[in-house]
Image 1 (cartoon, rainbow, N blue to C red):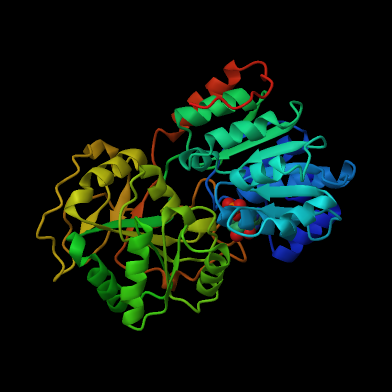
Image 2: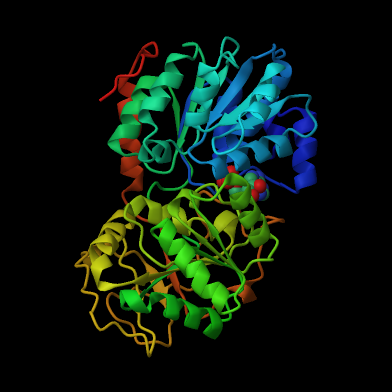
Length: 472
Ligand code: AMP
């Protein structure tokens, strides 16, 4: 199947050609025809599967062919949980829509609102926004939804995690009921299934890669140590293993700043990205990391989604996330679009419950290693995750394994929902993949989660008109 066979208009095909996209990804193959036909969509698609083009391309096609925007109007609204994701989706619309005469805008908090208001005056064909700032704009009467055709909820689970439920309800109440709605979510907890049941009308369910499954191309490893040894251990590994470009996650903003301080003192080019930093500083840090002017980018979970760094080889969890799903999102920054990546978690004894929750979620026991000189005084207990949870994987490490072992697999498999390893702008030479690492497979049970979600939605035969917020 080609993009041309999906019957997208020529200016979009031209943009795809310029970007070097040869073939649509699985999520694009499923989503594009449905969205072109005006259907609602419920998609279990992680970032890295090409989901953004999966909704952006058919929407750009329809917006180009179906009329023009009036002043203050918005024809397509994309809601995203974080500024980073909003910026990225906005950039994608501009990229894919480079040759169509449409107007795009992005709105999020933490930056002056006036330029956003000014842009809205002439109307926007596509507005990408975070829920809070969108509500500010709405309350100030700077936009209207009378022309709205499509609502896209990107990373819906994350929006709920970040406490946007009430804001979302207020936004939904302001939208015309006859619109098309597309819901993208990496995971499908009960709250998302309920939301889908309320908002979607006879949706097509798309499963681009198994929900809650770590990307198949990410080699995962736990290194056990004591809490206080983590910064030193990280420094040791950085030097010893010659890490070139590392995205590191820490639990708190303070933790992020402390680690960056330690690294900078050692002359390492490191920068931070977290919610306390003004947006321009966050964008600057990301741009410097992408340009390789910074070798280590330390982030909180707010940055875990929406960061698209081509060919990122390594993610390190300096601390495990408190929400197990965030682990999947964190490690999803690497191993994208068919490339192979590595995810290393430094785990101390007091994090064993978090590790257990992660292993249960991804249905695999993560292999463990200890680094001589950094062994844990407080031994990290076994998680007790049943051996049956382990997925086929491989271990070929020189270091003594502790904990569960997995059977050997010859090579990293290709992700179910990703691109072929030959995708032109994404392939990374195999020699950059560190040796002695672990290959894991995707989790089981994801399909049944998706089926349950689909059933919940199928039960909803009529779409209730949007309700005003019910404050709990
Ligand atoms: P997404 O999952 O939307 O965040 O996309 C992940 C990455 O894949 C982005 O860098 C896209 O530019 C890239 N991408 C999307 N679709 C394709 C395609 N059909 N072929 C090659 N790369 C793609």
